[in-house]
Length: 197
Length: 197
Image 1 (cartoon, rainbow over the protein chains, first blue to last red):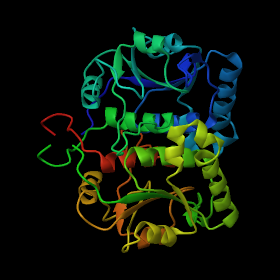
Image 2: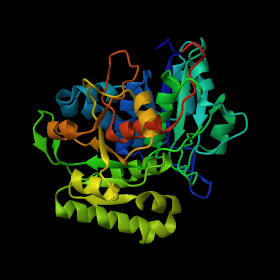
Image 3: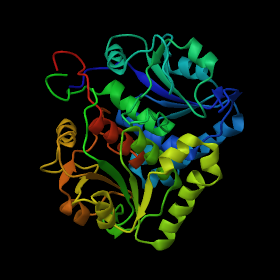
């Protein structure tokens, strides 16, 4: 049921990401992103969770939050939150995160976005690939309106977007929900709905 | 791939839920719950999203937030948020939500918690049942440390918890992540990992 996977980490990127008009911006850290995504990352077996932000003061804030929930009062009070928040690593940019994750060789950059893209990997195929031997995988999510075009262009793998079943083709999950669902889909084996599918 | 499902709604319950010690409490509304879970609910085809709270002032706050994101400035500016937040219905208690969802007959109450329970329904079985003809289904999630024992006891169906693959058996997803994953697992058909499973 739960074969071995490659080492993988999660990254939440705050720059360069897009605004509604598609221009490159930096977004601010959202406290609940740290909590929710670290808990999901730990649940599904990720090695670490990088918070990517180029602004020193924002990374310092992440460090203060993590300190509170690990060696500080929060961590002493809530053991399960301590375990999750211990996975967080502030990083200046994706290169720093890739270097840290792939300390014995280059890590692969896997990205996702809400929009489909030619050559994207379906989720069952991505799951299969994550279960094959290979370099560590950094699964990166963009805040704002998604990873910049340059980020997308340099990625090794484009994972298909999560598409639901709403009648309208609605496709606007929060990054916290999208990360949870993709971690589930990419790491957990499936039983099919029934024998015919 | 996407057979018809029964009508279903999502409920986020703020009372009666448990605190860390298991005592019944009411929790406060969290703004991001409204946004994240409404977006997930719309993505996966839910009919509506009930915010269950017995305190009038808390329900009034929900109404103000929803107004901002539907007929107010937020809704005029962000169409996709308007669509999601339009699904929100404040409700005094689960009975009010069940009555509203099952306007032509009683709705079924399906609950989940982070803990396993005898007689719980596995996710593929729950998915199969949701695809069979039957009354509307209200899928209820608890805030705090989960739905009270009385809530759990009155439910028609106990859906199995989401269990990940972390080595430590870590099982502490946020309610936003758990709702996203369960909506995905209960409404979307699966392709198996490979032919042998």
